[in-house]
Length: 121
Image 1 (cartoon, rainbow, N blue to C red):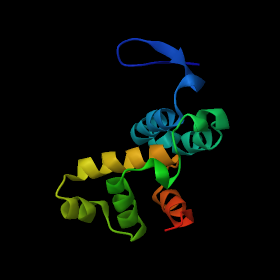
Image 2: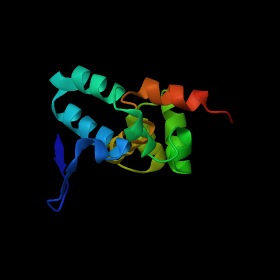
Image 3: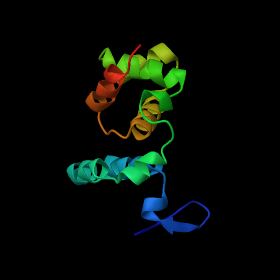
Image 4: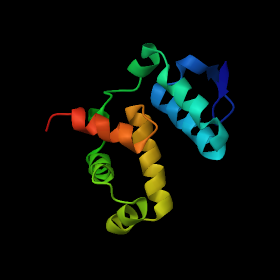
């Protein structure tokens, strides 16, 4: 399978860093909710070689601001309340959450919180 990047370059699917692959798949899932289960299953079986290209992985892959947002997710704040607290739009928070999920290699709030809770400190 090939993926076309912005600018027209085409690369093999598995050569794409895992976080980019996850972000792409989550974008598709956001637009095609009927495919969510299949996309989550695909994300779950991405090969470890793809995961290795994702950087540090886990919470260590997140910026301090992303860790803070993940802690707000763990505290079960609604996205609208997070947006108000951070003085940004709801759309911005949704985008930031998608980015966090991609970096962590997860597709749900519960999975992101589980990664956070597995991290010491």
